[in-house]
Image 1 (cartoon, rainbow, N blue to C red):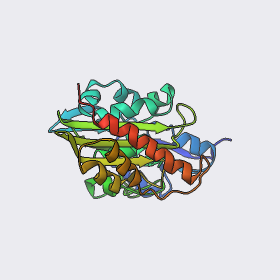
Image 2: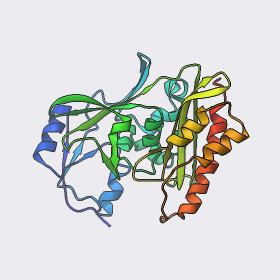
Image 3: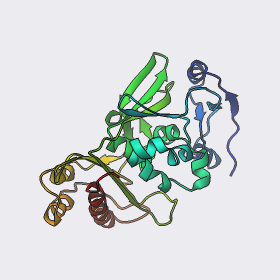
Image 4: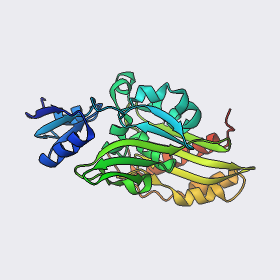
Length: 284
């Protein structure tokens, strides 16, 4: 199929973008376009105006500053995948990057676009939630910061307003006691995950503290498995502790196009065991 007719504008500033969004209530932003172009071609999206934001300066780049890692919205997946700053200071994102689509998609797709699109089966929203990160957005009232836990509202729905532009994401920089884990299951490499898990924790002797388990592909948003987090944090990680954490998984599942609810619950336990082992690995 071909997209429905639309107008095109190449914005030169955030102010121009915000103004255009106010003038055209059904406009869409074009960053990497790896999700948008597909929805346009299938006519799942039919905006009257496409606003290309790639000419706006200072919306890409990766920086480690003030105990955080800040990633500009227009940073390409491939940039993050090969970034030494990401590998060293945001290792969970580094682990997730190779699972995102294929090389051609990662060359064009942007981190900001993935977060703003908020596909519940995507890797980066789950990583942002697992890291307790935050999002910067600019709108008619200026700049504001939104915590990841408040950002994802529903299926492809976020806290961004109709004139908001996501400009950056920010996550805490890893420290010597940071532990992360990531795993997903898909029918083929590059497909959206049947189910996946992004996790972070802090090493505390032989125990784990501040465990955050963020499942994706299991609901309309990334989902924290809080009872399993508590089970993993309750003592030294051994076979009994892992069994208790798997038993505590409280994911409300339904059959979908990929698999049954029972299979997805089973796979969630499989991933939890795999990721728990990664969380016990010391950073090198």
